[in-house]
Image 1 (tube, rainbow, N blue to C red):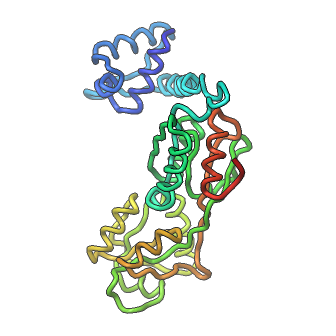
Image 2: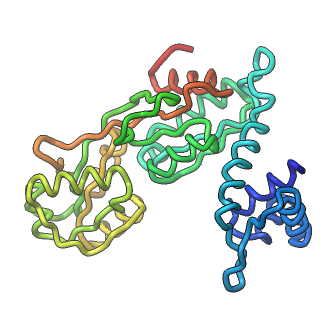
Length: 291
């Protein structure tokens, strides 16, 4: 069995097509198809079904993909931790939610990069639920996300970095009002309820018996802020101290919840992995742990 075929299968899933996978890997679409056909012949199963003009992973294909992802991730970690400075070279794959990417992450990564100039850092954005899943699948070394709503699995670790209060965010020039009044008087721009923050907001609205006039649902905090700035309504989101201070010049921020709803933001990682020493340095830069 060819490792290249496994890597190609993972690339197809990540890019969405045989052609895009070939572009990423420097292969022709025909070469990609040949590698997948050889993998199917070796396993004696079909991995893809044709649906219209697209090739779609079938049941067996999804099983093989999951195993291939683990193998490719392990191969990528093969040289991690070798030698005295081995953990501080190569790539750090880090996920981070919006409030962290636009807040404290930049200065922290600048410190890390200055300390370890051979280190390459890739930062991926997304919702907490998606970034946590990518950590669990071994596709990210760590992710800075909202604290998981379920119990953290025994093979993983959680470190709280900050508590972020939630605010109703409204246009800057509206008359003073409470959070409940703002939600009653203005159209509501809802965050995707699949996001953990969205679930917390929905639970608090139900607990207080607030039924806002929903005008729009978005999965992007930046897009929600743009809609509020255009006067289309109000939204609710959690903000760290620095981000809240920056947005206060552009928006009216009213604490949300009775008492004010807050979420923990922190770092989620596997309990044991090849980049753990480097992640410990990252935590120390945020003010947690020891170097």
